[in-house]
Amino acid sequence: MVARGERAVIVFFVGRADCRRFRPADEVDPAYGATLREVVERGVEVLAYRMRFSPRRVVLVDRLPVDLSRPACQGS
Image (cartoon, rainbow, N blue to C red; front, side, top):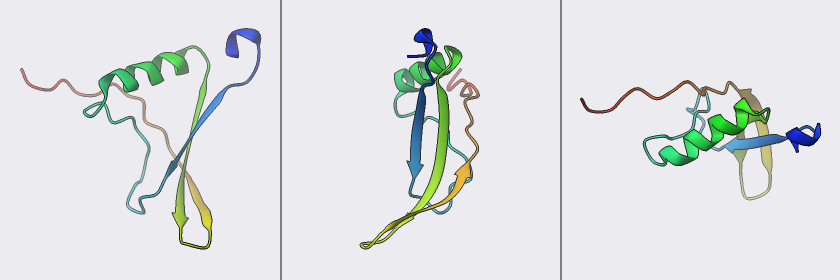
């Protein structure tokens, strides 16, 4: 879509109250983190929102900063 001049956005909804930022879990799925960074470099926007949910409703609490910095090397 970005290549066609359209806006492309991926939105993450975070259900953890203790979360202060969004970042890909490279330690769980490094390919996903790498792919997310690649599409961002191509112009896809990333938005992240903290949410609170109950059996009756879902509430967006606030927008979280997105951290796409490269993960630290593991091991030596």
